[in-house]
Amino acid sequence: MTGTGSGGTVRLRPPHHTLDRRVVGWWRTQCLLLTTGPVAVLGVLGAFLAPARLWLLPAAGALAVLGTAASVFLPLWWFRVHRWEVTDDAVYVRTGFFWQEWRIAPMSRIQTVDTVRGPLEQTFGLATVIVTTASSKGALKIEGLDHALAAELAERLTVITGATPGDAT
Image (cartoon, rainbow, N blue to C red):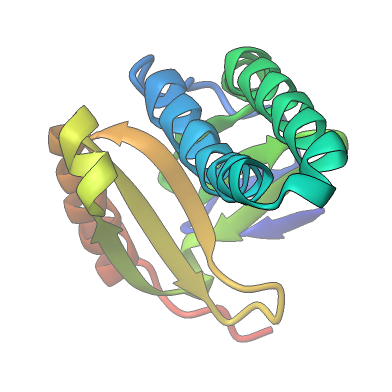
């Protein structure tokens, strides 16, 4: 994909910046929280329903082991894959797991820039920058940024997009 932003050329290329290292802990906590609910339900049901105990408790144990393994390994993998970069011409984001997605938002296509800090993100001192464009694919999200960096990035994007003429195409 190529196009023009504020005078330069926008090309598909790997973004330069990694996320904040604390994002690994944030993702691990999310995975563990998602695993804990179903494991607890299966465990409680297994404890109180004697006829189903033979399959509920092993299912709870298997889910606990898989959830814990996923919580340990997947966030490390995601940290290696997720990248972002902002230039004067575009926002570059690479995300994904098995299917990696590379997205580019030319500055002339950016409509809004938001920062979001959920309770868990706040605990880890992180924030998400959401870049909304005219794309039918939806907004670009840069998750796992230090909250101060996210605020600076949102401010920088606002200044750059304000100075960027609209794209007539």
